[in-house]
Image 1 (cartoon, rainbow, N blue to C red):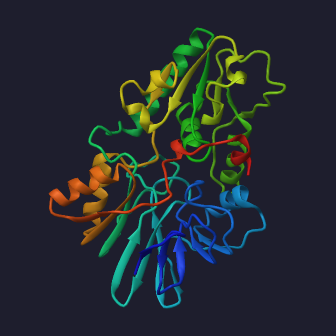
Image 2 (cartoon, rainbow, N blue to C red; image 1 turned 90 degrees about the vertical axis):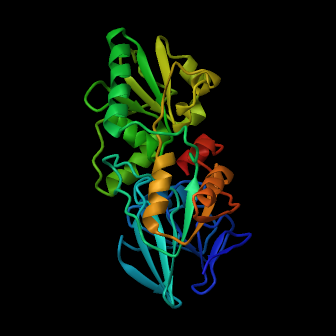
Image 3 (tube, rainbow, N blue to C red; image 1 turned 180 degrees about the vertical axis):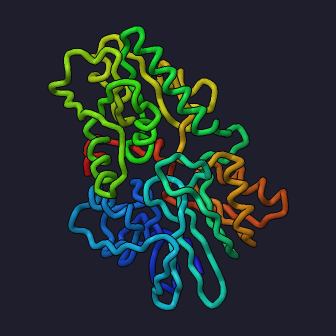
Length: 336
């Protein structure tokens, strides 16, 4: 029921693609990150919470149809439904059923409940397509409460010494989690890229902490003891280096690895990720009871090898997806 083609993952019975990376007629979208939702499709199908972000990033005039979680849409005889993936706002696993066979494409997912995203729900199936962004045993996330506490403690310590806390995180998903982590402990400024994504959250009636949009051409003269949230594209930029008495922290799953922070010349690093860690991947795969597992982007060879060793049939699949932290970002892409 699923073919891996040049254009992307294809359901021949339904005649649609899932998260295609080349232009096609009908694209079923798991979530709005740039590596899964691309321009040029004739029409899109996504979750209602994904639609505002999709239009913000790809253009207000794109043709978008929405499907809520756990509702069914028949597409050329294939029963299609969306189920929570827990990755970011509106992220969905795509369940396809045809003549009794069930295939689920997970997109990106995480099992932790971050308080913003609809929590992940396992879906039983015959075949399961999983990511493996952090598919190594070394990746083992702290609880959301513990991580939020670590971030807020770092910010409070900086503030008590008059230091600006610059937090670096992807504008869609990561930034909003950071805002929640530091809510109520200081004045929050956000870069234009984050503000534009926040508007899509507000359209979906998702309440975010109070913040002020910052214009780097005319930024406030005094940012001491405040919180500044920026996308990775600004890391090591002149505009950040021009802020006196500032410490920088990168919020990314890659910060789990010792030495990653030094490599990026940051003062601190927090392993905050919107992807499943090693145990989360294994728990999700186990819960599907799938007979076959297809492993996509990330440490796919390592996860595939492990799954086969424990008796679960698994195969590597090459895709054009990548963890959002690895995407080449520009300010224009963030504003699209």
